[in-house]
Length: 223
Image (tube, rainbow, N blue to C red; front, side, top):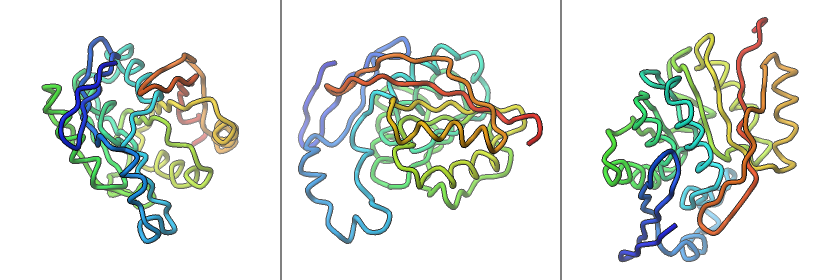
């Protein structure tokens, strides 16, 4: 990975999904984190996780590349898109991607990163997955990278899956191996979803390396 610094921002180069992707982000992450005041933190704990690129997203991008034939021409939803890497990769592979984040700031970076990589723009939305402004049964595929880091996210995400995934659709979740997300898969199974673990690999990004699972989730026969 090579870092090319520009004023107040930097471009990191990420090798995944068959090429090198240029991702621009805030250069001074430490100052950004320190600038978050109590009013910003609030009940929703609005920390700027979007400003970092996580290893799970790198492996998820590779997984999309390996399954390009499945998503080409399909309507796909990217959850918590952050700086836009996986949405841009999916769009470059011929998917019709809708990508959203809770915060507005990352969407400006994501849009610029699409231009930076010469990829047609996904549809970028600022949205809360607790109140999704999306049509029922509208997506063939849903994916997300490292978004199950808090237990409170499970219920609204499961409701979102149930509402917007088409019959026969597929969900791919890239999650680091951590205790907080381990019960999620059993809980989904108990609610009628079928889950599988098709890939476990080490992934690295921004000086961090993690073991990441790709989890496949589909509707059970009685849902």
